[in-house]
Image (cartoon, rainbow, N blue to C red; front, side, top):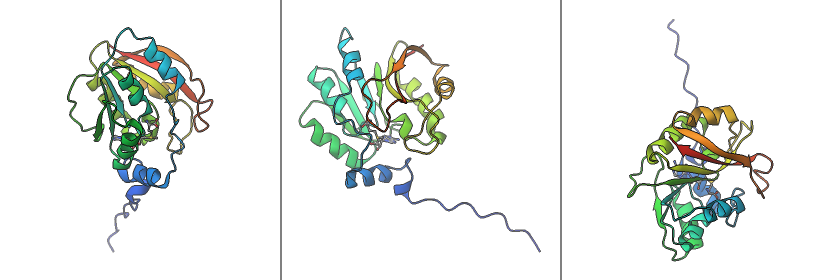
Length: 207
Ligand SMILES: C[S@@+](CC[C@H](N)C(=O)[O-])C[C@H]1O[C@@H](n2cnc3c(N)ncnc32)[C@H](O)[C@@H]1O
């Protein structure tokens, strides 16, 4: 009798897979968005205020895009991007008529209309299943020129089940060290409950 190959594990439905837009649409639809700060985070506002001039900025996985509105109000060029149509609708409502390039697109596949000098990270990397982390590291490096900055909040802890998926310092370092230098790293201020005590504000400069 010939042996049967093991049958593949059943694939979960899209709304249970965070690599799929339906996962996020379901949460926006149901109003279950515990990651949403509901305002512009203090560390981000301080970092922006410390820059000498507006910087062309990309916000991947922007969700409600509070930060994009802040940048637009300061006259910064900003692209906010999310692959969930429901997230983009939430961002549109939050942004009103602020001059933000708001795209419904996949971070890993979109074609930028301009070069970015800053990529802002908040609750995007920790939303991605681990199998996508190497791609994320490659993509942020690909999108930034030498001297460009990757700045924002990182969920640094050993939380395996997610999202949010925790990342250990050595894992983050392994994703970025070839192409980036870490130039700022400290605990985040005023984290919301899902991230409290486990969130760091970091700035990485593209080599
Ligand atoms: C946890 S939410 C964070 C939203 C926002 N950054 C914030 O701080 O409120 C993660 C967001 O990333 C988006 N996302 C996940 N994978 C994506 C991808 N490959 N391309 C674009 N957006 C993505 C989801 O749709 C979701 O809106």
